[in-house]
Amino acid sequence: MRKKVGIIACSGEELLGGTLSRAAARIVVEKLRPQETIILCAPLFAAGGLERHGGQEERNFAKEHPTITIEGCEEECAKIAVDKYSGPPAATFNITEFIDAHPKLKSMSREDLGEDGMKLAEIIAEVIAKKVDELFIRK
Amino acid sequence: MKKLTKEIICILPCNGLDKSLGVITREVSLKVIEKMSDVQLICPVLLNNGDKRYENLIQTAKIIIINGCMTRCPTKLIEERKIKPFKQIMIPDMSKKYKVKPTQDLILNEENANLAELIADEIITDLNKINQEKENNIREFQEQEYFDITVDKYYFTVPKEGYFFNENDCWIKPEGNTALLGITDYLQNAASDILYVDLPELGDEIEQFDDTGSFESSKTVLQLISPGSGRIIAINKRLEQNPEYLNQDPYQKGWFIEIELENFEEDKELLMNGPEYFEYMKNKIMKEKNHLEQIKSERDV
Image (cartoon, rainbow over all chains, first blue to last red; front, side, top):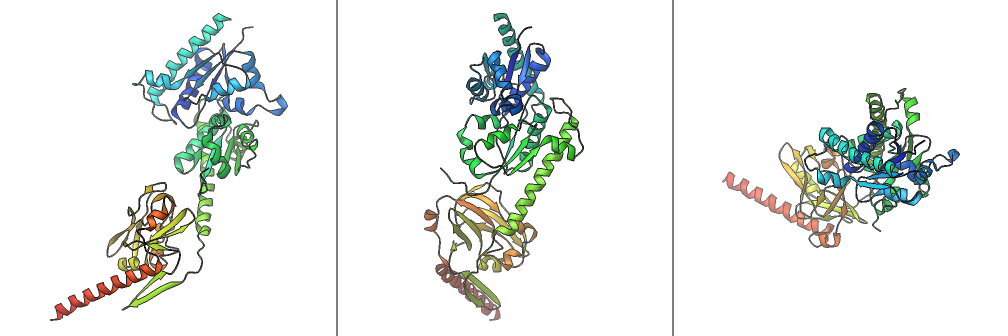
């Protein structure tokens, strides 16, 4: 059985980049590469899982599987967390670079990305999906 | 470390992405901060990374935690910092309470959005109740001694201590690094029965002598000219329903706003204390009285 790639979005709530990271992660996992990827929950990763489950499910997954982090801003919360608990991530994408590269695709708000924001999330998701493919080829 | 002087409410959702319950927590918190601009959001992942921006905040603020599932990630993050949350909400409990079963969809659908709306409304109602109780109880003024003078049928008072005044007949009452601001008895007498009050916005930065809100009587519209500079941390919302407080009790119940002081020592250089303002006010009243009498006598001639 092929190993899955973990996708972990910063999920940041304070900024637009966090919303875009959430949307892009879901598009990859639910639409573009559902068989090859699994979503990891950043807050769960940070806090540790249920005690009765050993508390390390997400962290152990990222130790044993390549994991891609999607960062909403330069704080790189997801990368820092993966690095801290599981080792270096296989790849990191920063949403702000995509926002800068596509100035015409303006998201509506942090709460609602709107049509252009969703288009941008699709573009980001496509790039991440290609990285997932690369990781599979490498293996 | 800068001490926060005003009680701050923060909301810390689990914000999870892999379960619909986490998505609901995010929606709840966004709805709360959309409707209550003074509530601050804490991002759990950023908090976990030890971001310094939350260091002071989590020690002083009242934290409302919204847990999506039994893993209770945000609770763990707070408890491991040895902080007791103000309130904890579990989405499954709320789902039972409102008899709305959340669906498993990771994209927010109508049912889950409805549940988020109900939970957000409950939090907002609770916070408004707390704010209201605080407003009703917090301003307990001590008995004050006044200078007073009666001119014709008008009675004017000036607090002897604790207040400072500008020449625009507005007062400031500093307490530590915050201060209450309002209008003097002279100004309320000049306005006569006050009918409407227009308060400034919470959070606004004001400079000394800025026009900081207004009030209207049947005779005139007058402004509160700020005797101090700083950030507005409270407004006396009760004045909107009870503008008569400005006439009845201008130095206590009729306080206008509260500010976090910026540099009161500097502001004070352009202000008068109680005895000085009382003399200033008396002169002003006598001049006006003489002026009116002169006009009257000229008219009679």
